[in-house]
Amino acid sequence: MKYPFADLELARRLERTEARGNAQFVEARARAFPEVGAKWIEVAGAYAMFDGPGSPVTQTFGLGMSEPLTAEYFYELEQFFFARGADVFHEVCPLADPTTFALLSERGYKPIEFSNVLYRPISVDLKLDASRHEEIEVRLRRADEVDLWAATMVEGWSEFPEVADFLRDMGQVTARSQSLAFLAELDHKPIASGALTLAGDVALLAGASTIPSARRQGAQLALLEQRLRYAATQGCTIAMMVTLPGSGSQRNAERHGFRIAYTRTKWHLQGGQEPDAGL
Image (cartoon, rainbow, N blue to C red; front, side, top):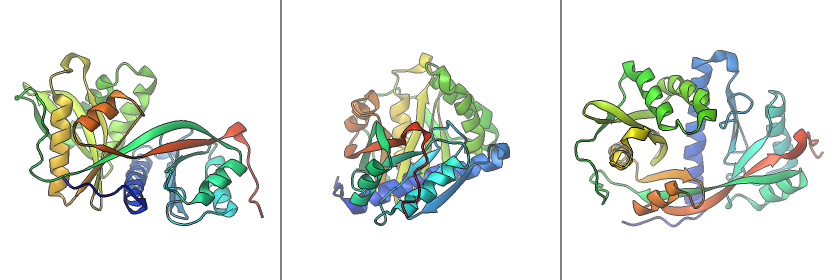
């Protein structure tokens, strides 16, 4: 496999893919739950998403990836969130323009979280080298299986009850979005779920989970392999995923050919303060 160099050009492709995926989610949220007031805007190449106060989707992606930033750009983004009663969060790539980090510091932001962005080349004949239960089958979710897919996902994340409501809603949102939903089955019963977002030639893998009673049988491997193959048939040449640094998810991704492109930092505007436009 030939890996593209993890430079600014690749980072822009990866960041744009995740930004587009989240923008599609917000658009679908607006259709499924109009009372939330979900909306997204683009400012200087950065995508700002509002999915309700407290939602993990309510933040920006791609900040500083397209052009140098100014205090006026930051002010416009901040007002988008403040006007909706939300805190301001930016997920920032280390290859962003240097003006990004100077302004984050000047405006009172603090780093609160890190994530690794991983990538690998893909092809239609891709085969992951690991043992699995050969009777596990992976397929796209059908239109009448929205609740089934959502229930499988929620059960797969059952050890995190604090996100159960968000995940249940996510099933309805995904049904109305451009993201692709997959189910893994054993004996014709769903045991795992996963999602796939395609943007240009990059595929974003997200949302994979396996129900507790069916773990360690290769469901995640089957889901991963099938999604990668499917993305390749749709013209994608690169797949990406995002994990916590040093996590089991990162370790598993690296076992299957993913490499770390870079580590992102999530920044939070401390104290709910509203800096001025810097004019």
